[in-house]
Length: 192
Image 1 (cartoon, one colour):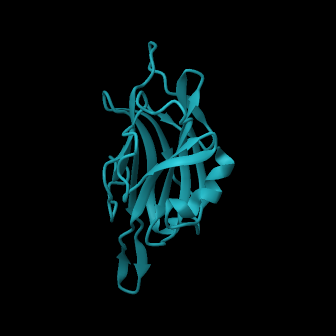
Image 2: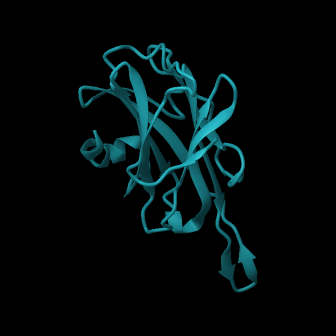
């Protein structure tokens, strides 16, 4: 059963019936919103990029994004860059896989971001979402709709963080501006 998350909501990453999740996928999907023009409506391709920044005690130690597809320790992996989106309501246009058992013990948070590499704002995007999936069985655990349609070019989507012996996910949904994860670092830090 999927939990439709709201901004700031946290969920435990424990399986029903006990045990912790071992492998999760953070998926991102979106569609370009049609724009009305002189000759009817049309869409313009939008290149959103998903990134995962790994933190140890509020210090960034690694990042996974379209130019660095696998974390240095191999626990986090990006499936590849999608330059146009299009899935929207269904599956993922981009995905980041996290093997929670392989994440080094000093890594205490992984923050997921999305940014418009081409600089278009979220007013030009529709049906955007991030979701967390149990990668071992394909079950969607949580979904967060990236709504707002504002004049920003990025969002700090969610974070997966250690909670005792397990992990939790918190939906952040914080609007930001920037074309790369580096641009977003000042906006990420308050959420750690």
